Length: 339
Image (tube, rainbow, N blue to C red):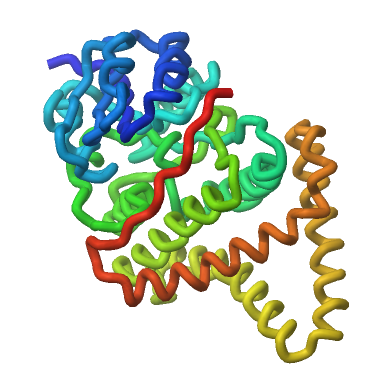
């Protein structure tokens, strides 16, 4: 049986506001016969809007969570048997025109277990300005370094293309809040093949509009990180991948130490805070200029505030992951909006 190259899978839960635009962006890049949508117990018009773009829509009556919905969709349409690669895409994301051409170059030349693209923010004032820096810095430094060392920690759920034979072997029942991190660690631990970064393969995703939604989103990400940290025993420094994870933790540890110092020695804290603000300002300005997102420059002085929020969420999420009942942890859905 001759397999087609790439299937696109789109999990969606109450995404009526955005899924039409997301699928329209895919229409510009791929034949919609190869696009598959699962509505995960949605109570709005997600499924009916999806059917306006593709006939391949699975409408689940009961919410199964993202991993469960993806597994049901892949099984329903036998995607790992019919396609060589499966592209995980999100309903609030738009695909860049270069994404599939760049990914296809990589999978043709190297046949990786997973190919990872670049996640870019859509413009929406303060929170998106911080994300321009956060995503830009992460990709410029961490992702490229991890790619060189074969230690990519996470294949983002909106920009990851999995080889079908690898995807068929993955455990979808990890029960974490970040299935994309879980899948990436499984590939690395089981040595199914390389996870490669394609910097020019871009997708554009929505950022939260409110601080409440920002907190909910990063707390889900951080809780999922800790769940995977303990489940996959990433604290053991016996693999290069684990050392990379521990290195990533060092940034939060430094911020936790800084905040603790603020309580014990407030006068010295002001001096340290000033130094950290200066360093962050220089880094953020450089990244924003490199990304040519000049509109974000006026927001740079406020970025230290986001670092404090990130640190508070990271600590809170550790307790949530350790003491929360497995399978009972949940998060509030981030509100969608029309651009």
